[in-house]
Amino acid sequence: MGYKNMFLRWHACVLTGVALFLTFVAGGPFAWAAGEDWQVLEQGVEKASFVLPSLSNSTNANYVPVTLAALRLDPYKVDFDLLMASELGKPRTLLDWSGEYGLIAAINASMYLPDRVTSTGYMRRDEHANNSRVVNSFGAFFVAGPDSDSLPPAAVLDRKLDDWESLISHYKIVIQNFRMMTPEGVPLWGGTTKMFSIAAVAQDNKGNILFLHTAQPVTVNEFVNGVMSLGLNIDRLMYVEGGHQAAMLVNAGGFSQVWTGRLSFFVQDGNLVSLPNVLGVKRRKSD
Image 1: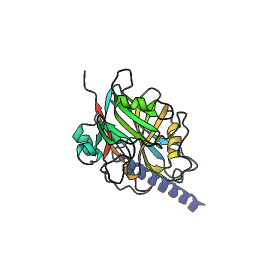
Image 2: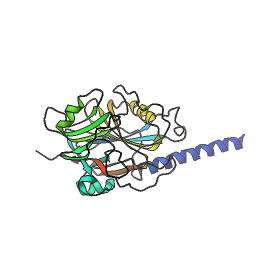
Image 3: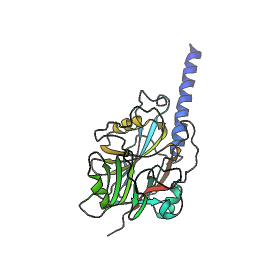
Image 4: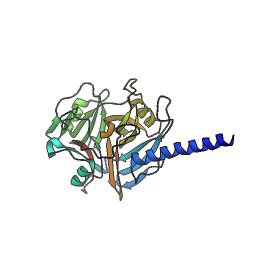
């Protein structure tokens, strides 16, 4: 009996150690503790980390917590920018994009085609179109930089609900990608069982824009259900990248961190991937 109890204690310690190690490599040496409240980094930029609830369909959630890193951005206090290799010369890592263009936060703008330059969906900044084709199967648009004060400074449009064809013409920045859920939080990706790291852009019911990232691979439906269970009041959710290319950065208020995706659940390559298209956040210039 004593040997059995000793073995059980040893087994629990091993599993706990694995969980802590994987959480560490997911967020890096400067990761904050999961489950903390929103913390203001500077005007218009907040950060938080949440443990997504264990879901019965997940093959990994039984062994290690899936951590969601989140940045909440007030579009009335920060500015968004779209940086594209097709306009600015070459792909760069998030750190390089941030350093060169003064970004205080950044995330993948979109998936990209094999040429490693062109977005899979419609993408435009001012008159420069990285991809001028609207993809019928992509149901969401991120927009920023309106030509009128009557429009929100940034938003995630739902192609099924919004007058998107009219609205995108009034914005400087337009990025199209997959719509991940209905406004009620119902996942839209069917029953796929593929698991990968995910980066996503969301909007809550107060008009805040959220950058979301999970390094531990999950299915899209698990991601959606997990995010919606957190009470973040999200009603728009757009997929931007998956796998080891999924990345997010913050460098605000003296706090800096970069999140990267994984090659598999137990393997993180540790390298920052060069990305052709990045959605960035800048400090708003004083009027």
